[in-house]
Image (cartoon, rainbow, N blue to C red; front, side, top):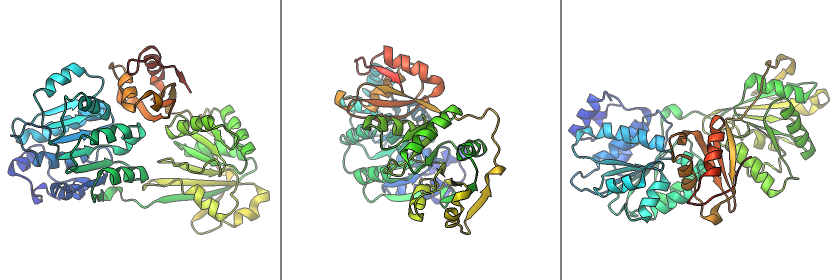
Length: 451
């Protein structure tokens, strides 16, 4: 679709032409007509889809440049994304003089930001924690806000920003347009929409509209533990849940995989609640690629983007099988469900035979020499949580206060009553641990250790 078919000002169209933005991307074509009509919107769009221009064009077209007050606020999960968004907005804003766009993120001088805010701005781009700090200090006002954008909403949820977002929105007028952009579209995102939006239109770029697809394969084998290692070596899943029928089998299998240099944790009924939390947090935040679970222990477990499910033990019934494998292949991603069985289980395996399922011999699988599965992230535990009034923004700010650690190196943040967990990219974990152990969060010292 051509931008010229949209109700945009001549100045905006000329600028888009100068930027060589000739045709809309799929997400722009779906989202912009609704945004320009001032409707609330949920848009499923990934980085690189042109989403910034989609909301940027909309909020810039609605802007009253003569009114030197904050009219638009874009909340981002990290300083790096906020910088990218502000850069793109400034390019799009060239069509009109004197549009002021200001970045408010942690890791930058608060005093300098105070000085910039004293001269007002039309558009604020920032992280929830720092924006909230300015609102609480009354150095920022949202009373004239027209458009609020939650960019990469799912990532902000992963980083534990829900409380900060709710607090920020308590300062915003109820009559406003709220645009929510997210790479995934799940119950958490819908919950945010219900709280903060009014009859939101849901759009998804046609290129992302892929049907859920699960490849189902059954392997006959003589040694399940050995076959499992070969499976991982062949398919190289990023994360996988392996189901066993007993907690003893779960414990033993996790130990066996660890001996084969595969990072695995088991979750079963014998774990204390704090141990269960430790395991689930590590698997959900990509600090452990393999989770061994019994059906009972896995209840309520919802992991986004799970690349593989393995039935190490065949389940008791088709209903359990369907429930297990349904955890992969979500949100348009392709999933793999593999089931293992030995010769004495052939009759049980035959019950699953159907046109959509492949039955293969495990001899076709070959272990790659030196294969190992190590996590992308490592989890740090902070002995402080909600009872200590710790927020995700406080932790993020403490970690990114200096330039040696960026927001991109920080993964999911989970905050409980007395503890907080933060996932750090493996290569940066030593830097992060020292920062938190020898530095301060909210002017307080907290014990910190690697999980």
